[in-house]
Amino acid sequence: MQRYAQITGWGMYVPERRLTNQDLEKMVDTSDEWITSRTGIKERRIVAPGEACSDLSIKAMDQALAVAGLAPTDVELVILGTSTPDYLMPGAVFLVQDHLGVRCPAFEIRAGCCGFMYGLVAATQFLAAGACRNAVVIGTEIISTYLDWTDRNTCVLFGDGSGAVVLEATDTPSGILSYEMGADGSGLDWLVIPAFGSRYGVDPKAFETGDVYIHMQGKKVFRFAVESMVEVTRRVVYKAGLTMDDIDLIIPHQANARIIEYAAKMLRVPMEKVYVNIDRYGNTSAASIPMALVEAVQEGRVKDGDKVILNGFGAGLTWATTLVQWGKVEAQMLEAGFWQTVLGQARQVNARARDLVSNVSMLIAAARSS
Image (cartoon, rainbow, N blue to C red; front, side, top):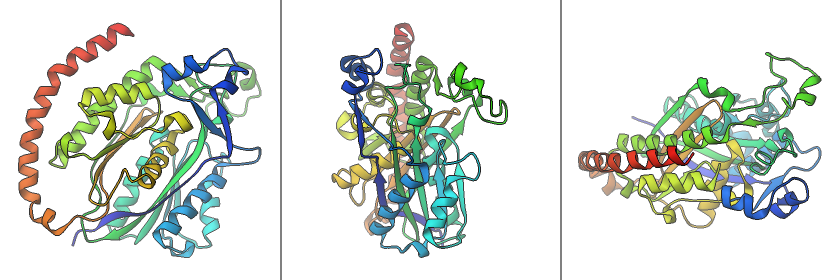
């Protein structure tokens, strides 16, 4: 019998400190109008001194376990997606696992903004294979540690936070129905922190050269993000035998409001069906999708039976998109599954042909404007 991985718990944590655009106006040559018009961000959260990746992760995980009704000692697997662990070695996930008081398997995924998404797919495979009965997947970032607060092109974009979900094995179709993941290392230098890895070692000069901070080629990342979000989303929906009309909500990585709006336009999806909270948190990298998912659920935007797209893209370059069935599928939906797939694929062929014409002109316009 096939096993599925249902999301049964969710939680998030953000630091108390709010850094608004008005605050940034006093720190760097920028303005609220400049930041808002280009990114959609109004404020972001910044960790307190001494607050680390594992601290945020534990608080988000504890909330998720409470929602799922699981005790810490019930957890059988922990996966943490992060690029900003407490230490270079060992991983922050082991501090999180130790908090549980149980010696379960735990590992970390460093896949940029897709760290949580890679973890979600990996955990689903563990549960589907019968290797464990439940798993906690966390996305946490403390990007503020690696920001050059004199560089207005990067310091205005990012924030700190954590989100977590609990997955439990079930025989009823639920959780991820289809997905696609990928990577393209040729774009590594588009979004990178050069210092302190094994290539350069611990070089004090990195502070002088600025290699300890995030370096980003904004225009290239923008184009990659839009193309990834649009094309991968279409393919994932197609794999499930559905069309975009069947999707109840899209929760994209919160990198830039303009990226999200442009991609939604290309997908012919109204913004009412796209969840956006970047205005309150900025880009929290691997934490952005689980944080947005938690808020969407709390606001009643995600309900049992809904089909939700989770779409990630980021440093690596990496991308990962899943189509998630929230809650459990009703019996009548299972009976109609075969014809839903057949009809859905036929509708997808028509939709892809229609969109191809419009998207070619949009891409040409975007290339000219950049």
